[in-house]
Image 1 (cartoon, rainbow, N blue to C red):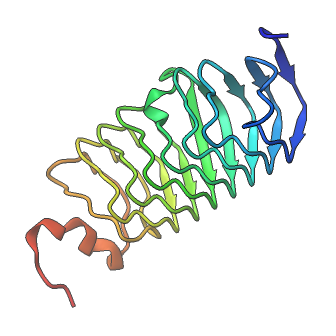
Image 2: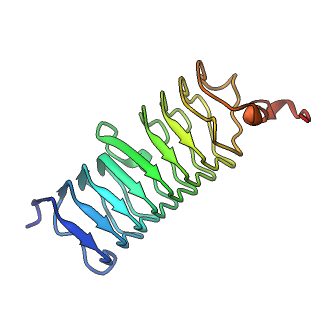
Image 3: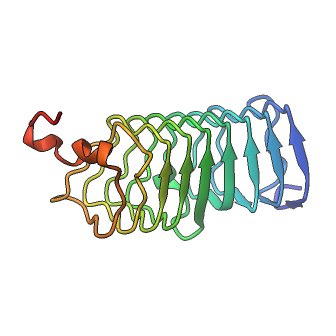
Length: 190
């Protein structure tokens, strides 16, 4: 069963810290209220899977594939998405906590972050072209050499983005959020 592909299954309230995952590939599966904290998910593939109310904090993601994966109401503290399979990474987040996670050098075009807490997340050299940060807290998130073209920050808050260090052509910002683009000048905006 080690090399199995598990399809269209529902996993509910399973503590994977005590019971290891049975397969190496999961397609169109639902994981509801499961605990993956500190679990080694290396080289496992999740395609078309949904994670709802799960805790994946500090899980090991070496060469993990998240293809069309959706996370809702999940706790994802300290995750290194930068260790995931870079060719098979497409994710969306809704009402998630991603504190201290990293997307360093990952291609996340058209990714949707909704109502999520992204405090101290590393987006250095990430391609976020046409992504959406809807009602997201980006306090102390790092944007350096990040591609933010056509990215929507209209309802995001607490961000600090240096336009000289990032590509922001046609990115959308609200008038209230303009201060986050001028932080480096240490000016007061009233």
